[in-house]
Amino acid sequence: MAAHIPEVYQVRLPNGMNLLGVEYRRVPWVSLTFMAKRGSETDPAGKAGVADWTVEYLTLGTGRRSQLQLAQEVDSLGAHLGARGDWDASRLTLEGLAEDFQELLAILAEVVQTPAFPEEELILLRERRRAELAQILDEPRELASRRYYRLFFGEAPYGQAVRGEPESLEAIELSDLKSYYYREINPLAASLVVVGMIPFSRVEAEVQRLWGTWKGGGQPSPPYTSAPAKLCSPGLYLLDRPEWTQSEIRLGHLGLPRSHPDYFPLRLANYVLGEGGFSSRLMTRIRSELGKTYGIKSLFHFRRAPGPFTVSTFTPAAHTAEVVQEIVAVIRDFRDHGPTSQELAEAKSYYVGHFPLTLETPRAISRRLQSMDLYDLGLDYLQHYTDRINAVTLEEAQRAAQTYLKPEALVILVVGPAAHCRESLAALGPLTLIADQ
Image: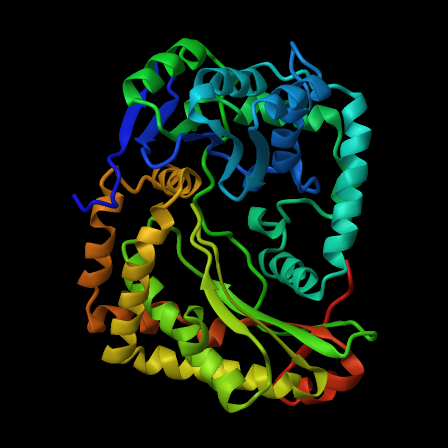
């Protein structure tokens, strides 16, 4: 085993919860993460944000301590407690000194297993989320991305924003959070990830003591794994923002799930297309050669169910149609020919060289373990990661580009001043104006 590849331990507790751990010996620190393997894809229709709200709510008071008492206890240990919902999973993380491991683990168990759901905190949480969302929606890039996913996925689960929408923030009630907790925060669909300077034998003993008899609520929802039955029709869409001087451009189509066997060939191919910074085809053409943007990126969002493939950029409004046309042309050409041998070698070099940097801290290692567990990648995933990267042939990378890039299926959204780009966009093909929601 390479020196930088940690040994991963795994134990299944009697209640069904999975325990994963790594003995991290560089600094006396520990990272504890409880991961419920259900996320925002299980939010009720019209109530985007429930999963994310719920895990934050768990930190706002337990059966023993108020939010203030809990925060004071965490602060007294020099630790940090955080919560975050996401697609496919919801997480609570507590990090602190390794010498405080037992106390930190007990606090995390208390937060997860005995929430109080204090009613008075709901008003404060809603106010915080309103302020946060107002700030987010004032940012053009965030607004365009949110609007694109809603357009593309429609009523499908991935169409709702993880942190919620203005209308959903007003609709969420405390009963929604309790229902989510008693359904999805369940040892039958959860893992505890421990990375730190503690022998795993001690980790296992303490986890068995504090977590082994926890039963949770009812039966968690089935995992969301299927592609939506209905998606937005391919085409060109425009959301008018008359006050803007630039256009935000989002385009894409349905991608692949993380479990797909062509993950590595496609990841390498996409690095060449648009994930590789200044060396990528899209950046070379749209920024370096044409000078129409400062940044552009393509990304396959690999999730439990097929996530989107997206290209994101911005440009002065007058150049909008030209940039859209050029992006599609680059994708089409790359689909037809794929990467060169030199481009593939550079992509491999990046991922292999960057890999050790993703294993430098307890938090970084924990993220790797969470992904391995969430997507059933196997305990030997880290050991064989670079081998799988290096094993991808040019033919496999080219085939991935030809198979999974679909320029004819692109859903293209422009958010910008219609007065300055509508006519030129309409010249590219049928253009649909969409309403602000």
